[in-house]
Image 1 (cartoon, rainbow, N blue to C red):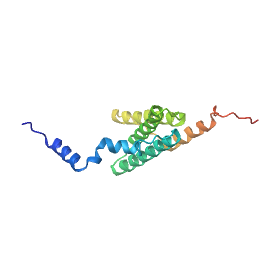
Image 2: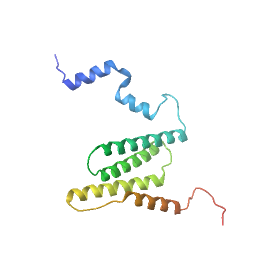
Image 3: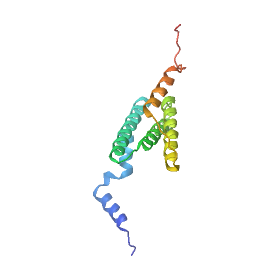
Image 4: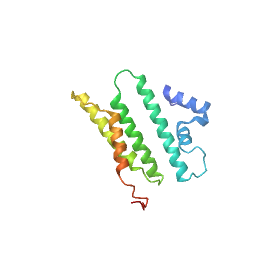
Length: 152
């Protein structure tokens, strides 16, 4: 007779007691709340953005519980969330948002640089709020090529 480990028995008992609460089913229900119903791109994009905002709030809440300065982890996490949002859009054939893509890449790289430099002994400060303001300003200055402007 094969013996199972305690974690395997616990997982088996959990699945028997809660057959609808399988972790993969829960994740699938979060992403696609109505099984069999095809969502249009606009609703699916809104759902992706809602998931990204929820993940961001969970990240910030979790990092505020941990003592110490967690700024670099928050910036890395925010970058991963924004890049994940665009990955979901790409997989679903929804056009990616260039602003969130660039902001996510900048956040991921600058957070990683801050984390690595602090581990190596270099002192590197990141001012997140000014960086966001600069990114928003650059985004607003770039002309939108999708719209035809008959102005001026």
